[in-house]
Image (cartoon, rainbow, N blue to C red; front, side):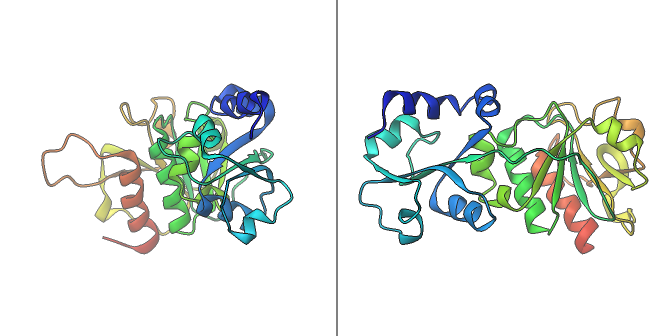
Length: 243
């Protein structure tokens, strides 16, 4: 059974301020936790519901069996998984880029969008996602959960986009409402695929750095596309040559 101090600490990790105070984040569910373990992450704490029998997890030295009532007190989900872990947040490296595709996100606010974009990067073999300082925290429980384990394989870097873009010679393909038709854009050179805020798009101070504006052609009457879906469509064209 968890102590009151343990419950207090684990509950605090739901809040960004305390995640970075303790440099720890939460992951829930056997798949996400196994993916993190396979990618070299070492759990600080691993909680298993009484009776959980997975040998790989239960044999770890930090594993602790607790009743379901304890998991219900600390979970970030409506229904807790039988597996809950705390990991150290990776040390943030100075961002650097080479001849590669990088997803760049300006002021993305929705945790589900960020998590899905990280998952999209993983699907297309993209190793880096660059986020502006105004983006939702990549290690919030909702983001980690929505990555479905991809947070273990994709490096998420936070930086001032304007500062990064001002120093790069890579092309910056920016998703906007009134740019060149996606079908006509030449993605021969690897570079940044940039998406802006869900409501306001790419910030005015970032727009001048765009070297190629990109618009997904609209066939119907919807006012806009979800940011994560937009990024997936742009990735399919840039990386696979579709549509």
